[in-house]
Amino acid sequence: MISEVSPLRRYVLLTVLRWLSVGVQLPFTVLLMDSRGLSVAEISSMWAVHGVTVATLELPTGGLADVVGRRVVWISSCVCGVVASLGIALADSFALFVVGFFVLGAARALSSGPLEAWYVDAELAVDRDADLRPGLSRGHAAESGGLGVGALLGGMLPLAFGGLAVNAAVSPFGARCLSRQGSGSSLSSRPSR
Image (cartoon, rainbow, N blue to C red):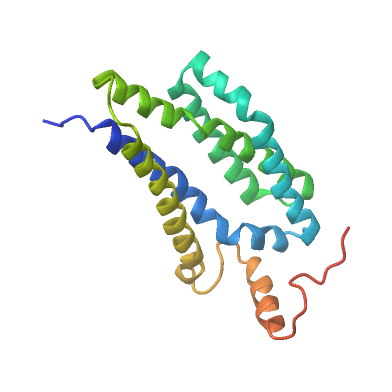
């Protein structure tokens, strides 16, 4: 017989999985964009698109979770995250990267809150006087742990593919970085478009 998983364990597990996937992508996202021809300024603007999207959608998506339900918003966030990741992985132009990072920002805005709100509701349903701080603290520690472990795993991915990154086009960027390491020059000598 399978026993029901406690809300705290489910909350921590889902939080770890969410941030593990983000961490795996971080080490090579910039390298991928550079290998696809984006300048340093264009790469920086991708993170600006992401940040502005998150900031713009943060409040409306919180209200959405209250209206349509936390689970629906959480699952929508996961779907948007997968779509964004695939879009970014396949993007080959500035415009496609903008779309990918916009969807990634929307996924982040959708994911910030419904899981924590679900956990709080689940704990309070069992005990109205429950101390929520320890559980929420574990969730926040799980965010950091998942992100850190994911970044380590993402950084090791090139080793798993014989020294090449997931997209072999990233490899020349790595060689260029290594050749310039002691010279003090910038990572990308390509002029801005």
